[in-house]
Amino acid sequence: MTVAPAGPKVVRQRGASSGTGRFRVPLWIVRVALIGVLLALVELGVRLRFLDPFFVPLPSRVVVGMARSIADPGYLRLVAVTLGEVLAAFVIAGTVGVAVGFVLWRSVRAGQAFEPVVAALFSSPIVLLYPIFLVVMGRTPTAIVALAAVFATLPTILYTRMALREVRRTLLDVGRSLGLGTWSLFRHVMLPAAAPTIFTGLRVALTYVLIVVIAMEYILQIGGLGLSVAEASLRFQAVDLYVSVGLTVAISATLMWLIAHLQRVVTR
Image (cartoon, rainbow, N blue to C red; front, side, top):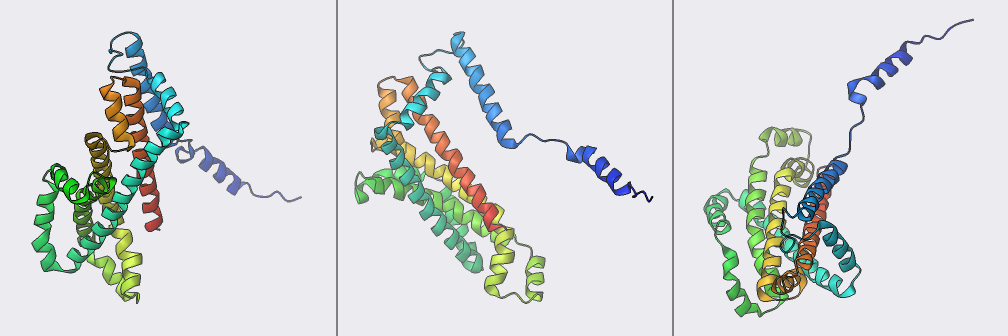
């Protein structure tokens, strides 16, 4: 009777017991646990009166309020208004910003001439020009979308041009040596190489879109979560205030996750 060699089996067992095969906790569980710990500490601080409940309500009450708000059709309309304005401004800023950044990269002279201007505008408080947008477009959501889009377009332009400039020439030479055409070279070489920096610019743009939209809704008292925050603060309703802020954070986190997923799709 022949006995089969046990060598391969032993190797597999050693590999399974090695450090590389150890169980790792998913990152989303770590994030949720961290948020839970922070909320528990705040809850404890409020209950022990280290924090004034007039200004910082119990997180448990805020979570219950968020659940009730999501089930309220009237409140969902406010969320839909804010989400619509954010998405509209972000799509405009992303499309225009990437296109202009590409043009400034293709034309070296134009890039050298206009990049300092774009950077100067980005560092200036453009949001203070909202009265001009109101005069031109009226006290409407269109004015909010336009102001947010203009502000968010600037970092997208800067990051797109920088991303394309930093693509290594070696990668382009290898692509040309493989016979790739202009579009194939851009799609399969340049875009994956530049994508991380471009998507960093899109994340910055989304941040500014959210800030401008919520701030303008708050100041102008025009629909959306900003209006809810304004009304809650005027009535000194801390729970309602934190509910609106919490939903804004949830929307921001969801959109950031979608951008990260889109980046993975583009860089495949």
